[in-house]
Amino acid sequence: MDYWIQRIAALRPWQRWTLTILSICVFSTLTGTALATPSRLLRVACIAGIVGMTYVLAIMGRAISCGGERVRKEDSRYMREIMIATALYMVVMLVVWPLQKHTDVLGLRYAAAISPLVPLAMMIRAMVRYVMACDEFMQRMNLLALSWATGVVAFGSMAAGFLSSAKLIELDGTAFILVYPAMCIVYGLALAWNKRRYS
Image (cartoon, rainbow, N blue to C red; front, side):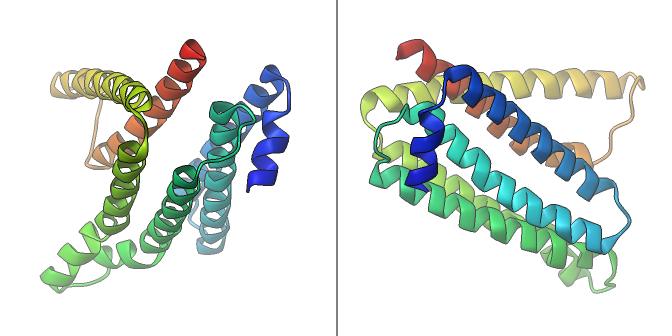
């Protein structure tokens, strides 16, 4: 992992950002295909690709934020914990979560429906451990990024809620599933911006 981070960090900034944007596009395409396809085999392939692209995006993020410096022990631990939680999340979403549509036992339906919360809790734990291991300056930058993420996603959620209440758009429960990923994306972008601004 250090090898790839160093190689990407050695690129010119526009090259790093171009690779990052392309990676985000591939990730988004895989996610959209996985959600839209009726083919189980294609969905499995897309989920495997999503796990791989999560790893690529983590490397890209570290290469941009570390700027060629050696990766800290805390960063390596964070990436390892996030990758394990992400892989578990994909497996749960592929294998366990669909069971809630195919069982009549109410307890099993509840368990299957909330089963993705286990890897999600693992991700949140990894994030908290990472921020706690940072120095005060990095904790401040993480707090600023989290503030932006909370504000932007809350604003977007409220706008969607108002439009839905006015019957201008239709939203179902699936929209709630997008709140945490949206927060993570805005948080990551805000953190990258903060690091660039203060470096």
